[in-house]
View 1: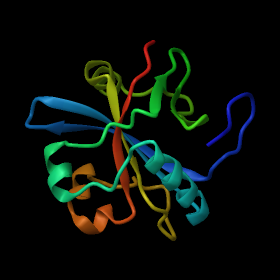
View 2: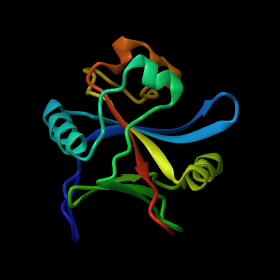
View 3: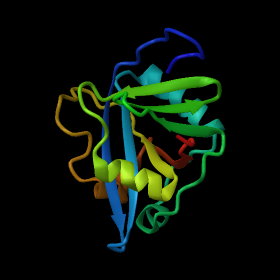
Length: 157
């Protein structure tokens, strides 16, 4: 998370983007973020809570009912392989290295005009494997412990 303007501070973390499909018809773009350090998680947890994200219940998660984080916005940069979440005057940029977000993910973001953002607490000994092999596992309460979730509007491109 970096303050507005040039530069910023790198937050060691792992991320994953995915498309979550509800009732075989509604596709939602998902951005999962897992900070590597507890202090970074606490800082992000506080800012995202103030912006309207909340701990999802199983009922909400299974039905795709997430709070709208009106104090945030997601920017999808054209020609730049990154997704940026803007919250409380800070910018959280997830770099996608040499690739851009997948076409199904971008299409879902354009169709829904929002991105489901999920903050996951750090996990000791986490390696390079996917944060959650199956995003649907967040329906299990043990997987949601310490998580925040919410939809963030996509800024106009």
